[in-house]
Image 1 (tube, rainbow, N blue to C red):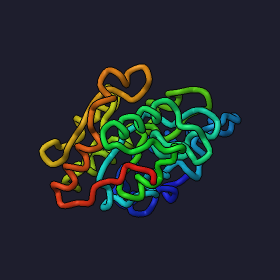
Image 2 (spheres, helix red, strand yellow):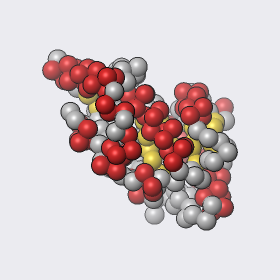
Image 3 (cartoon, rainbow, N blue to C red):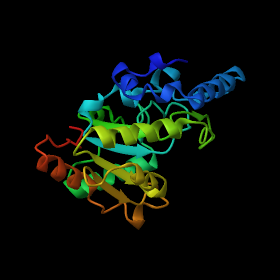
Image 4 (tube, rainbow, N blue to C red):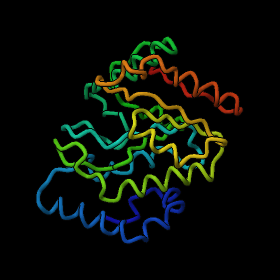
Length: 225
């Protein structure tokens, strides 16, 4: 597993990180897990799908997740998203429910968020891999340092981005972001365990678009039509 898997535009941005000892240790760990026959998600080809979907200079919105879905066929490298043909998980259904309430869009029948990414939404998990059926199994192995550096770099190099941070884990990343240069929106997580404590009704999707338009940028089409 090499730096070459990261799209070149992001690789240039983050080259300093991938020369650090933690990066080698992380990939040694992943290689060992695979050698032991453990199933890791997403597939290696999709590990950097969030970065492949949008160039650094095209990012408008960042939606930060924790780690990939750990069920069969669910993870494909975009936070909260699932491939076509896979039923939207509960958190994603609540995201669609809030979009419907906030913007009046009919929820889609699928959970593939690729169209968001194509418009400049970086669907980034803080941890980019997970062992099958073991949520959180690859936390504190090095991914967080990499993605924290990515968030901090976006904050420093870009202006006028929207960061959607849902739940206490994501909210903690606000410390990496210059809130005088960017819009940071926080709320409860869309999980069924917490969605009714502030995610549903947060108005983040319309707020993000108002901010982008105020920056003279195209809003995100959050609908799937």
